[in-house]
Length: 305
Image (cartoon, rainbow, N blue to C red; front, side, top):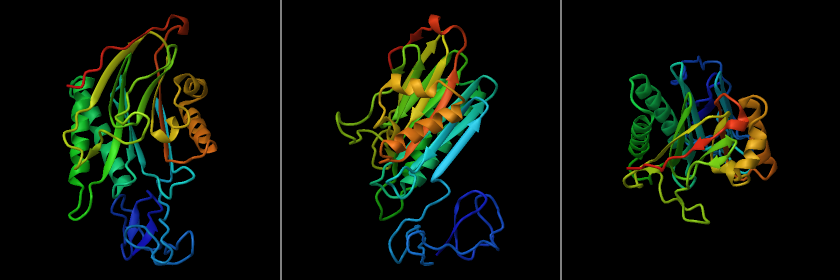
């Protein structure tokens, strides 16, 4: 049985555990959890109430990350019982920042675990490779490879493979590198606002043609680098946002005012007000200096080999 979530870090903990395995918090005085729907104390190891079947909320239902150079918000939305999206934001020295957004595939087992593991390993790998002097494109490909392996190896005997999508951005001075597998998206917002990614999905549907997971086959990421002369922002998001607001111009009108955190909060709120049918994750990285009137954006041909 689970006792609920660690009050310090939100990690799900088991009955009888004295300390959280994630952060070491003392759980000896933690109250026993009860189902948020029916009040039963019979919560299974998988987080579902054994009395009414309701999946219990976790510390990931709403997450906000704010760093000096960027911010992100991830929210459960209004219809799902848990947040299967994940994000990771890290700095890489003085000149680069890295953001990763992953969306767990709901039809797979433990999609929330898959998305968080993929986001974490991808962000750390990119930052480490950049610090070692590797280029952003090579670092992105290696990060996706390791994230794909991490998700694939998490499959348990007798269950289908966990799965998720991934989109990443590396912002370095006047250059941005994006990488992706699946249908989570990256946008350039500013003069010449543009969608930077192409969905790995059957046109007009959400049926993925590429993803991370043991059943995904060979994972070959799309990688694209662009430069700009003017200010703006890079936005990463899951389909919980772009399902409602796919147009770059509309996103720019909301994301380019206020702080990155306030802008991410506004976009999440708009998606929830539009229905909140899915989990919603938004990461915003401000970018560039100079006069907006002089902004130019160069998009080279994508290289995915």
